[in-house]
Amino acid sequence: MGYSKSKISMPVIRQGAGMAEESGRERRRFARIRLARDVEVTEVSTGRKMMGRMTSVSTGGVSITLDVYLPLGKKVAVSFKIREGSDFKDLTAKVLTVKDLSDGFAAGLEFIDISPEESASLEAVVNDVYAMRELKLFAGLTHEEALALRSICKELKFKEHESIFTEGSESDSFYAVAKGKVSITKKSNIEGNKEEVLELIREHEFFGEMALFKGKSTATAKAHMDCVLFRLTIEDFNKLYDQNHKLATKLLVEFIKALSRRIKSMNTELVDILYPDGIKGIDPSIVKNENN
Image 1 (tube, rainbow, N blue to C red):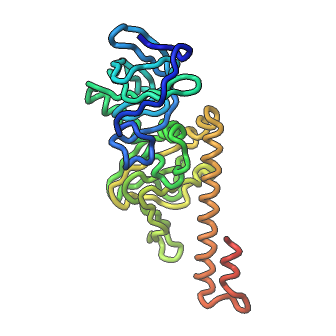
Image 2: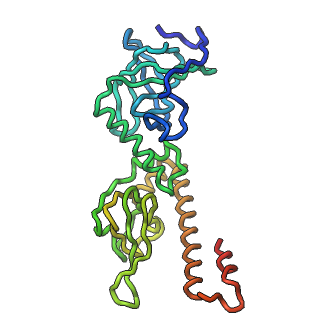
């Protein structure tokens, strides 16, 4: 039988290294993400149900808070929903850790007898969060924000040399490189239709952000090698703006910062090209510093 917070006060009880405080993905047996979700907990032995709140989850288990004390080793069934299509029903778990809080209890539950399909589904969610946060532009997102953004971004795969978009075509998408490399080229005004490589977009970098501000592509993008991209369309961004104004604004600020850095870099390169020996009477470093 469980005990309410009003009936008992428990000291901190810790057991097992698998539920240690998070200090980085690489130091855990199971990568863990911090999400807040409602969780239904059912005692296996009695069928008694109670509601809790998820604080983090991994393929190995879930951390929750609730106002009922659960003894160590207690078997429970937990049900929760992480996102559309990721509903988990009656996952069997045992209580691995318990911590006394001022207004309830924190419990670490370890999954037992989880099916390969359920494990794969949980792993996909965790990987999606870390994949978004590995992108330089989104490194500062919380796990909640990364999951929300990943849920609206479409994953695309391109073979080596395959065209992603062409110069002058209608453009409505921003892209981030999850795997591989992308070459950005532009037709030369001097040598006819010969294409010049402007930039090589590497893994975890992004391109096409001007689509959020301008309707046509100013260059051509091709897969430099087999690659996996995340695409965010203007329509998706507008929906995100309506549904999660805070996250959309955060992304917009990051886009503007990135554009500013690129413009400064282009100005510096232009000075070097036009005035390789420096501008007469002016120290070229002064011009570069003006762009910083």
